[in-house]
Image 1 (tube, rainbow, N blue to C red):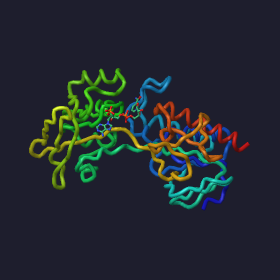
Image 2 (image 1 turned 45 degrees about the horizontal axis):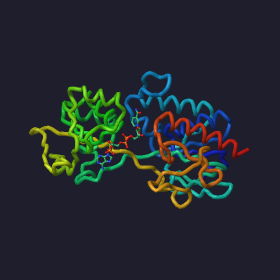
Image 3 (image 1 turned 90 degrees about the horizontal axis):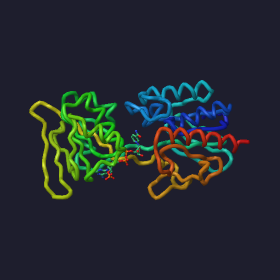
Image 4 (image 1 turned 90 degrees about the vertical axis):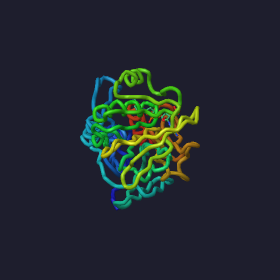
Length: 309
Ligand code: NAP
C-alpha cells in the first residue's frame, strides 16, 4: 500500500497519460502515473511520426521518451504496476494494483486501446511465431522474406511501408475494393515496387506444425480461394492491423461505456463519476491521433486540478 493520498493517479502512460502527467506535474499536483508495460503505449511502437505539429519527423519512442522526461521533470512519478481493480465512487478512489493499493482524490483513465485480433484459424497458435501486431517490434525477423499485411487503414499502410526495409515482398490483404487510409500515404504504397495489394480479399487460415507453413485466402466477391507457401527452408510473416479495441474492461459497471466499450465523457472529459476523467484512445470520440490524445491529457489534468480546488 502506497500510504500517500495522491492528488491524481493516471492509469496508463501512453501519450494521453504522459501529457496529463506533464500538465498535472506542472500544476504541482501530487501525481502518480501507473503503467503495466512500457511507457509510451501504441505511439512508442510506431516507427515514424510525421504529423505532430512543428515536428517534421520523429520516431515514436523518441517522442514518447521526451514526454516521459518532461512529465517526470515536472514532478509526476511513474510506477510500473498492473491495475487489477478500481473503486472509483466516493471522495477517495482506491486503485488495486499488483504492487499494492493506491489511493487518490482524482483519477484519469488513459488505458488506450489494444490491437484487434482478426479471428482467422491459426491466429492464436502462431502468435509470436509468424503472426504479429507490431511491425516495429517484429519486422526485423522477416529480412528477405515474404510478408502479408492485413488491413487497409492508416496503420496497415504505414506499417507495410515500414516493412519494405526488411521484407522481400509485401502483399496487403484488403477486404474492400479500396484502401481506407489517408490519400497521401495510399499514394506511397501504390508506388512502392515491393508492395502488392490484393483487394476484396480475406485471410481464412494459417497452417503448419510448430512452424507456420502456409496461408489460405479467399476473394470475398468471386469466392475464389488461393494459397501461399514459402519456398523450402524459408519463413513468412503475417502482420495484422485491423483496428483497435478499448482497454476498458476494468472500469465496466462503474464508468459509463459506449456500445463498443469506449468510455463516455463530456467535452471537459468528466466521466459519470465525480473526480474520474478519461483521456486518449479509450475515450468515445471521432479522431484517435497522437495530438488528440495529448489534447485529452491536458484537458483531463486541468479538469482534475479544478475538481481538487
Ligand atoms: P482503422 O482506421 O479502423 O482501419 C482498420 C482497417 O482494417 C480498415 O482497412 C478495415 O477495413 C480493416 N478491417 C477491420 N476489420 C477487418 C476484418 N474483420 N477483416 C479485414 N479487414 C478488416 O484502424 P487503424 O488503421 O489501426 O487506425 C486506428 C486509428 O488510428 C484511426 O483513427 C487512424 O486514423 C489512426 N492512425 C493514424 C495514423 C496517422 O495519422 N499517421 C497512423 C496510424 C493510425 P474497412 O475499411 O473495410 O473497415
